Image (cartoon, rainbow, N blue to C red):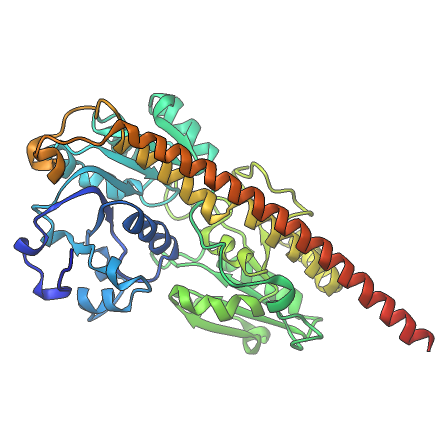
Amino acid sequence: MSRNLGSQMSLETVADCADLLIFDDILPTGFSPFRTLEYGHYLSFFDAKLVSTEGWRGLTSNQTFAAALEELTLDPDLKTCILPFSAAAEVSARLAYVSFLANAATLMPYFEARQLPFIFQLYPGGGFHIDQPESDEKLRRVVLSDYCRKVIVTQRLSYDYVIDRIGCDPARVELIFGGVFESRGDFDFHRDKKRFGRDKFTLDLCFVAHKYNNNLLPKGYDQFVGIAAALAQHDPRLRFHVVGNYSAADIALGEVADKFIFYGRQESRFFTDFYPAMDAIISVNRPFALAPGAFDGFPTGACIEAGFHGVLNCINDPLALNPVLVPGEDFLLLDFDQAQSVTRLRRLLDCPDELYRLAYANWRKFRTVFAADDQLWARTRLIASELLRPDGGEAPAPAQMSTGEANGQRSDPGDVGRWVELEQERNRLVTAYRELEGHYLAAEGERKRLVQYIRAKEGVS
């Protein structure tokens, strides 16, 4: 259905039906890549619309909704399915989808007034603070609501907390570790990674995070500066890159000031060229520093995206959230002992070959653990199963029915067979891809042996 964008929208334009309504507070800005990827997928896969609760106004200045939407990196046809909350009063749907506790809690009156079932994705942050009465009250209202069909959590801590502390039925909670980040880009480690001594003459360490409430502690910016100052004393090769709303005025940089580069806040497209030139990302975050009970997931979204571009993750895990990554094999584990962190980093920086070996292992592991196709499929299957529930759950009020339901039609239970076929096809593709990757790795090993042989022959001659 074609729509005019921006200020020309009217209730008559958007007063229609959809199977799925997605609610978000950041889009249409491009500062949160996972949203564009995840929600864009749902817009293309389902009969869906995205309703912006217009938190984007806090991220940009003097920008209209239409201008923000125009700049968003998304298929133009999908942009017609994104509308501001003020224009969505009459849009009806069979199911809603919302991420982050603060968003879901704010929308509860909307869901209840329309008797609209919803799936809730509980990411760390976004108002979710463990062992805090106000947060617990909001969480109970959301996950124990009769309209909450499923709860998606991305960390084991969140899974245990929702069940043990809040009392949610385990059958309604789905643990999908990680998040939706683009792992299918064109980056190839051997082809695109910028290496010290071959492509550049600096070793580049980066810090990528957003500063909230002018607080430097939660994301560990003070730790980054301290580590940088210690490392740079005896290593002129080092450069330090800061992306986010930080500046040289936040902490006195002293003698290393000329080695720091500040980029400000950047949209996702910036990182395509930025990350391949970075050697490591440093993240020593502090739980409960932003607010009592507030914590980051493991790894942070910025660290996952960096890892997809061959940047070695040098990160801490203060809440022991890591279920699968092996320190020293898949990433470099840091902690709050700054001297020890400096020692571990210096050991790697003194041996760039070992640095790139670990960065390559990091890249491969992230592409497996956080594969976008797997992450999207797990969520898509959950949404589809709710849309195809034979009993439909609580029958929605007529105002929330899709056009087909309003005419007495229901989703054909036989469609479930289509989802089974799709999953079987996906499994075949995954198997074929892994086989192809095995061939590639074997060829890469043969190439390296050939290079070693040629170099040995040249040395002899």
